[in-house]
Each structure stands twice: as C-alpha cells, then as structure tokens.
Image (cartoon, rainbow, N blue to C red; front, side, top):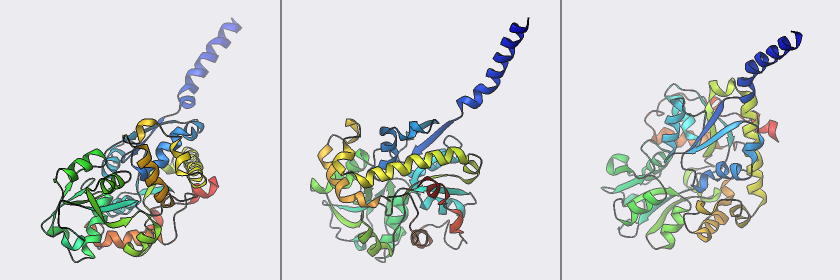
Length: 329
C-alpha cells in the first residue's frame, strides 16, 4: 500500500511540475529573416546558440518590421527583431516597448532610384512613386526624412508598400516604383544588374553620420516592457545567445559566416551575398550595446518624419536597456 501511495504521489508531483519543466513557447518575429540587416537572428539559430538557452524558441519571418510589431502587440509573439525606432513610435502611442540587445549601429538600408527614371537625388522625388517595405515602417520614416532634407515633403510624392527581396526587385524592374529604400542583398543585386543607382547609403557608419548626423541604431531585439520584466531569466538567456552571435560576426569573415548559413538563404546568389556582407559587416555591433549618440539621432529623425512622435515628450531611457547585455559580457 505504501509503494502504491508513493507511486501515486510521484505521478501527481510530475503532473504538477510538467508545465514548469516544459516552459512556454517564446516566439520571436523577424521583419524579413532573409534580410542581411537581421542576420544575427538566423545565424543564432544556425550556430545553435538559441537552442543552448534551453528555451522553446521559435523564430518566424514576416514581410516587414511593421508586420512583426503588429504580431507582438497582438500577443502572437513575445519579441521582435526589428528597428529600434519602433520603440519610440510605440511610446508615442502609449505603449511601452524596450530594446534588450542592439544588433546594428546603422540602418544597413539603401535609397535607390531606378535607371528607367530621371531621378538623380531625392530632390527629384516630386510626383514620383516611392517604394518602402511597409507603410509605417522604418524605411518609410527614413525615406521621408532624407527627402525632407532635400526640401521634398512626403505629400509631394506617392509612397507604396512593396516589401523586400524579390517583391522589391519586381517593383523596381517592372517600373511600379521610381525609387525606394531596401536592404542587402537586394540593393547590391539591383545596382550590379544596372537596374538602379544609389541615392543615399545607410550601410556604413561614416555615410550614415553624414546623412543623419550620428549613428542610427536599427536592428535589435525589442519586447513588451511588461513581458520582459516578468521573464528576466528567459530574456537574459536570449540576449546572451545574441551577444555570442554578434561576437561571432565580429570575429569571422563574410565567407566564414556564409558557410554557417543554409544554401537557400542567399536568394540564388551566394557570391553576391558574401560581397554585400563583406562591405557592410561593420553595421553590426561587436557587443550588443546601444551606441551613446544613437537614441538622440533616431529621435531627431522621428521628430521630423513620424506624425505620432512629433510634439510628443519621449523618455529615451525607457526605450532600451543595457542591463542584459552587460550581464552577458
């Protein structure tokens, strides 16, 4: 009888502990997993660093950062790999979101004009059709800011969402857009094939500082402040995985990094991908820390191009934290 009672108690105890042992699934939504700017998300999977956390992590891809943000706000995702500027935009809308690890120092984006047009600079955007990944996306904010610096307002041209990758290429080559902002490896593909020219380059720290006045921290992992405050241990493990990934990127060549990625990741042109990564690898932080001048630069751009932010009092200290990254060093 004692043995039966012990067995029953053991079963009950296991049933009680099972949910805690299994843990909840953590979904990280990426605004375009094949974009080079979000390389750390894919590479962390490939290197096994996310698996090493012991957490049940699922990384999913959607066409743009605004789509990823929507998934998180609806509760379908716990984190987003997207641009830091969304944390400022969301605070202006009354929502608290925090960047917990910074992937990049600059956007890694390129403003292109189709060679089928007469556009030579953003000053020529009047009456043109401009493509962005999504309305309300970071590419939308940046395009508006750069055109405004050339005295062209967003009302002077038409902006349409065309996504990234193949859909952006189709829109440009078929003349559905006259100009647009996109990331690698799409930008290098269009330029190398003679379909587009570069109007503004946000792939390097130097060129970004010239255009925007400072570093522009972009790709990051951001989460609902409330969720991460209640899951600090899980967030710490995830941040550690990404810090290790960023160090791997910093310490390896573009070719070595490409060797760790799946064959179908290169959009049928591995050499082009490696070339773009070799020239743009400096966009990534070496340690996951927010650059000191970054938040102010982003806020300046948002105050000029985002109607939700203009005139709002933004507390930048609440848009990011370096605590998890410092603990991971």
